[in-house]
Image 1 (cartoon, rainbow, N blue to C red):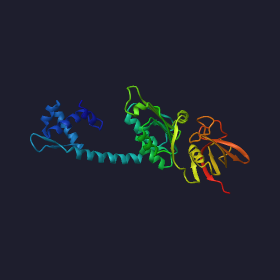
Image 2 (image 1 turned 135 degrees about the horizontal axis):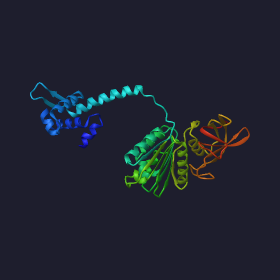
Image 3 (image 1 turned 90 degrees about the horizontal axis):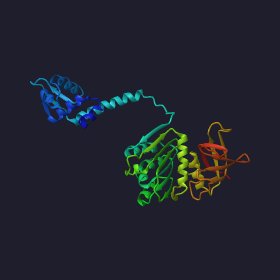
Image 4 (image 1 turned 90 degrees about the vertical axis):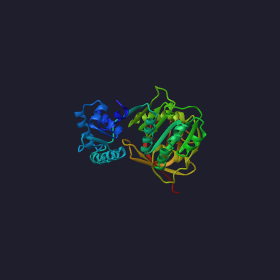
Length: 345
């Protein structure tokens, strides 16, 4: 089947309708017999087909002439009419649609470069709290626009850029909260809000991929997101910090945990107080106290005991307690958000 005819069948035309329509388009005006001869379809069946196409707004049938003449409508006008009909259908469907949040992991194997970029852009545009990304610098450069939109929404963005493309590094750095570089080639790891992750052969994103290269996109998968984030932090520790933005003005309300660690580290010379808004199932909904110590690896100088560590120690009710973020396993408390403010004298 002709490739154009095959594409038309995806919009509801049968194979014979598509063949008939293309034959009329190519002839401009034709008799039913001419169309039958061009398509090898019986004349009687062609009558039925052209009537069907006329009802779709693709053809005009002039049965006042003998023999009956068939003429194609200008494709631009025909497509415009179809688009209007599709828009009407979309509005009707939107009114009936009930949006439900998926409560199970979605796993997609992507082998096409453009598709993987589309998935990355969609994840970045949907980010609410944080994005951790390790990619070759030109890949981040291509994603600068969605990254910039995310940072303008208040999303914390940490970029580890591989390679030595100075121009791409400088351009991408403008879209991030903190940036490190590594001169070696890197594979691609992306974690968004700790629930969505992408891991890929970087050659796929660079357009240099081999037949078996692929990207793996996982959504609504906190455990996998946490595992990939841990891997990301190990690479992050090997990079060299080249840029970081100024922190938000205090007080900073309900920041994601690692964003708050970044802010506290930026304001290391201030006397700070933090309210940790805790995950359910702990002995309090929130705890508040001055910052005693920070263990972190997001900014220089790092102070962690191991690469994935981001821990705040607070003085609460005369005791020192430690607070970690999602999946905290060495800290006393696990916080979903932090509020950072200067202490009042």
